[in-house]
Image (cartoon, rainbow, N blue to C red; front, side):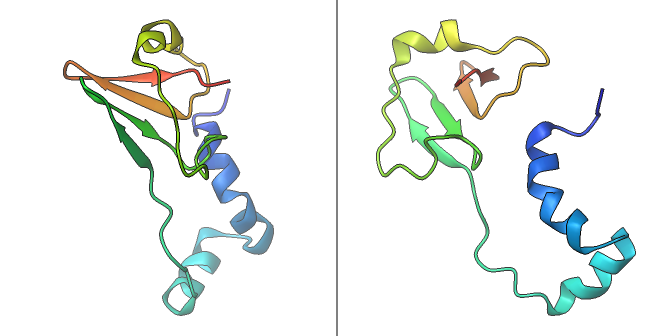
Length: 98
């Protein structure tokens, strides 16, 4: 079992194909054109919010509809991949969005 979250593995794949070591990547990083950062999106709710991670299937959609009534049933079990985080009553809960 990998200790690296699956999304991190996906995001790092292009670097692994190009660089043999972390030292090689670090040597090129100061001159590399990185482009705009990819940030999570936040959808505010009446109570709390939902963070949409960049690897979520709906991330690029202009509008994302979140039905607050379905959130409790969508909380992901431990070890399940997730791409959304529900901020609710002081807790951050991963949401299964598949």
